[in-house]
Length: 297
Ligand code: GUN
Image (cartoon, rainbow, N blue to C red; front, top):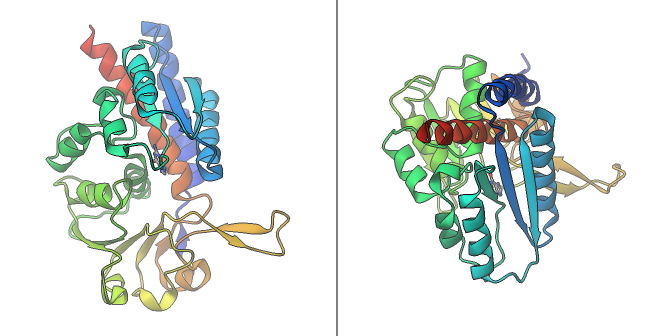
């Protein structure tokens, strides 16, 4: 049987509707409109298109948003001053500095300068620490989106073996921490496979749920998984395609055709985890706005 398609696009639309309704209530009851500041440095085309998509989603659901486009050679202290300005801005509840940053900037330092209550990426060490010890916090959007997608399809993870490919601070490590927590739709046995793993197939074959986030186009094929695996494809890779008008097409880290014959369920690319990531960013911004409101009342 062909795999069930886990339709991230459709679920993200449902979540956006829910957030829009809650946002309208927040506006009428408290006069608060969630606000998000995007900081985009340089002219990386992928970063530009991600920020554009995130900004469009804010407009769709009625959030206030602002995009600061800064030159590639911006000095670190100028960027820090801008972050501090938004830390103090009462109309802004979320600050997102799009990564990666140019080499001369200290990414860790920049993330630490964001008020952790406005860190809608969930990258600040305070949020990372809270996530690890199971406290309420703003969680990184991509792994939170994976968990939410599984939840909405009622795919239980307790006692399941989740194998994660990739150990980035954005996806792999926070995904491991989310799925380790002793709670529903987590409580899993987690393995992280990375660039120093010799026999990757040894681990991918053991996965009940496989999360592919190593950024290698169509790396995982049908021979690398066992029958009935749930496959989550986080990859967004451009590959040349002479048949396409643009000369390229977007593929994930998974060879969809061979894997979808073996897997029980699979996320498509595009239309899988990408839209869920954006939905979680909106959800985090709403949460940040509510937290700040309740803290001040
Ligand atoms: N670059 C790639 N993914 C992300 C993300 O989720 N947040 C930020 N800020 N930068 C990214």
